[in-house]
Length: 531
Image (cartoon, rainbow, N blue to C red; front, side, top):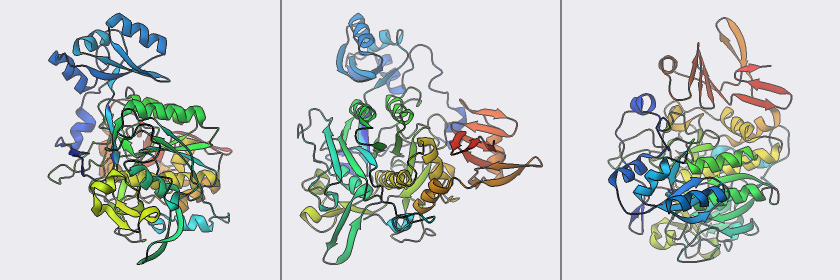
């Protein structure tokens, strides 16, 4: 699997970062596509099945889930080469014939796909400035002490806005043109890192007399480099970095993982090795924020649906779409960026979970990074350690949300990943023009999210069947949409009377409730009922 950055569409060193075409209607994607896990033998993605059917003698690198002993034993039986042993998986190299033989013995196989990264944030647009000043009678929050694992292309620590913010760095990239470098030869990670936690009192240049500040300038960054100088990496390196975070989370108080990267979803989240890794992190108490991807339109500029990238397809992560704020602090003119990937996912799950500013975001520029070297027009202001560049994409949006998560967790360190997700979604501003599959719960509101973290979610009363039910519903569906949803079933969606369970989303009547089993302090929120 190849993972890529979620920045704006651009051609980097001769290769298109994104630009896939889909013309299938949304209804077909959601309701008539056969579930990928309903297959005989090992569950394989379409690309692997095509490779096996071709009878090709070319070898592919695959991710195989299992212990080291299991992997070595199976590899020996089938004569395949073990390339790398991970904490919970391994990378093996096999031909089409070997894959076919393996498929009779293992549960599922996945390609070690290539991943690519997805491309001063307007903090007033999300209310971060209010959080710094203090909300709900509490003192200001900056994310102080919260560790955020930035799994990306590295961070150039020489930038003034990032001085003292990176507390640890590790390189997972192999065969890169800068072996062993823990800095940022690409430039994407530096840009995201400053969006999350950057801070500099110095103006960006003589004409822009404004200091730079990220969303959570008090947070600590743990830089884990998985993206090379060309903007791409391997899924296995991302998985290795995630497992490292799980093992070292207490040492650096890592509460958040930022994944401004991804790859086209080839299989259900149940079998996707990136999704398996992020679920391990969430179950370990770490909030995982993932970019939705930048495939919201095709090469002809037409809007397309159903192209959320992995691991953003996983219901346990917070998947973020990109907003175009039009350069203003007012929310009324915000709209979903045309490139932002829309749902539903390959499994029919409603994604993204929410949206945040991601268009034309000014942030730190890495000195000598190939992004700025190859695309000089991206430079926005300043020079050297005070240089800034402008990038667009759901990568940037994910960074904004990760910074907000740090603010939320500083305000209430007891929150679980599910509670953090709920606080963000319940406090978001619904965007009816973008819809659920465009912007999810809506536009990020950092101030409201922190207030929810301190005071608990707002409780609403809804009359259902003549009975008043207390719920955490955050929006009302268009009656026609609700009617259509009630008439459909898909995958693990459960239809029970007027109640529809879809992934981790509950639709009751025409109301949406996020999170099906949430405990908040001494209140238990179970589905839509307060017990």
